[in-house]
Image (cartoon, rainbow, N blue to C red; front, side, top):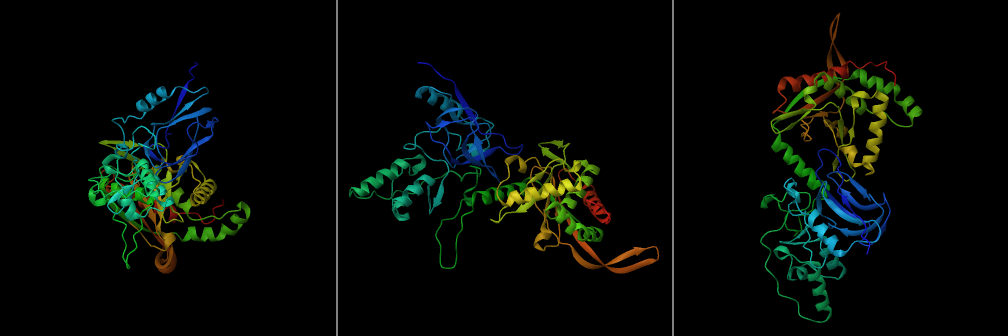
Amino acid sequence: MNSMAQVELKMPKMGESVHEATIIRWLKNEGDRIEADESLLEIATDKVDSEVPSISAGTLSKRLFNEGDVVQVGTVIALIEDGSGASAGSSNGQAQKVAAPTPAAAPAMVAAAVPYVPAATAAPVQVVSGGNRFYSPLVRTIASTEGVGQAELDSIPGTGAEGRVTKKDILSYVDSRKNGSPAPAIQPAPVAAPAPAGTSTLTPAAKVAPATSVSGDVEIIEMDRMRKIIADHMVMSKQTSPHVTSYVEADVTNLVLWRERIKKNFEKREGEKITYTPVFIEAVARAIRDFPMVNISVEGTKILRKKNINIGMAAALPSGNLIVPVIKNADQMNLLGLTKRVNDLANRARANKLQPDEIQGGTFTITNVGSFGNVMGTPIINQPQVAILAVGAIRKKPAVIETPQGDTIGIRHMMFLSLSYDHRVVDGMLGGSLVRRIADYLEQFDPEREI
């Protein structure tokens, strides 16, 4: 019998700070014929969903992970036969080999990096809480389809790891129930259960999601995947970096007058609006060129200075979650280019159409708290960066105007800039100088400038 080559499909790399992704949905079943570049599965990183295409034409011979599993970048997730099909024994042997966890695996992969086995004996990794017991999404779906209530589900003995109910367990129970057999005795709750997908398996017990019971006065809402990852990322940032925040108030009257002058013609000419965001990004990029030691990250006791200035702009999604698309090499773009890029990324972020690479590689982040009417904020650093700028609302205020003839009081457009920075590597002089320089560039904006 001819033996055809078997190709390994690996979880693709999606940015320097992304080490794992969650498998959301398989688009092909084992045995299906596939073409090169045809999408095989949907995956999700911390903030964006994407599809993984096949790297070869052939037959999908083995899926090594289940939907919901968290998989480390570079791990083999599927085996593809390019034609005749290798024997099952060789497929299983390769599956066992490529799915073994490595010492470099991220903590969340301790439970997830296991070979795929038939669902009848699988012990699913991603679990959903229900009272004090845990159930996989597959078991939940079968229970819902077959009309098995929560109390009844809790009574089913589990043969999976740590007493969990497997697909085989619930199907066996459903069959026995249809045949009129008595329900099994309630089993004690398992001693421990793995952490939800996307979180470390070392999470303390205090962080486990509460039981889903509700009273008349309280509604318990389970965090979605993105919110869980954002929460973990924010806590990790505060634990990693000693945060310091410096504030500067800037007179941006010239900038406001400029935008009022050009915005209608710009929209008519370009077919899109111009906001303050590209101007903020331009000022930040110029200031970072003046103070490059803010464009860094920390790796142990080493400082990594980045040559590219990649500015992330935090954006709120309709779901209420947060995403940070990145403008690469922002210092090399003119104001028109920045405006086009900002609008494009913002529109596609709201439509959930960003590519994984478009939210990776940032070296500095801007968050516009002023869009919610806030005058200032104390933002949390977007790791592994070391600084983040919050721009507040622009408000008319009485201010002192210095002139050769003396000081006067006038109505000016004022705003606060808040810079949070990592005090391990950015001291007050550097952080304070950077935010002051950003304010200087905004205050010196030419109101007669063309775009």
